Length: 178
Image 1 (cartoon, rainbow, N blue to C red):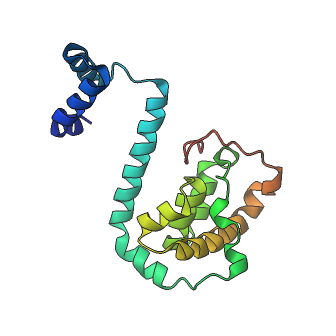
Image 2: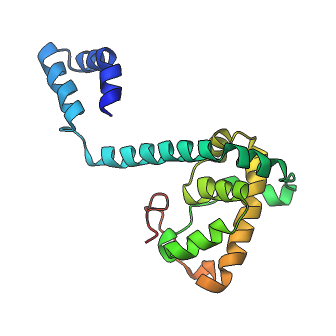
């Protein structure tokens, strides 16, 4: 964060100046932001989301070759497989133990696993997941369809029917698994 402030100091200071209309206040605003003095509670949520995306991009970069190979073996999905998948609600991670979720996900092929993690568990739009994975949206939807099906099958005996589990839409990402 310090590096961002250092590298973009003049434009960030200028933004503060334009907002405050006062040089003294803009200096206080800039230094306060740099020191984290003025961060509202929502900012922590934003920073966590941003940090998660940085980790996602970095992690995908380390498996890029494997993702390409796995995606190339992914056959196109039929229309019925694609219906509604881009709008799936994030899974209630609180209903799953970290170990159960980890075992189910790691048993999957890498591309469908990443599609499920990004779109279902992290709740990213299919379009954004496609950009991160370097494929088109239908390829993500096909992998998502197969991945969700496989994950459900793998976990059916462990967690019981998902329909009896309440959804918790306030929990971001995989943070609820403990």
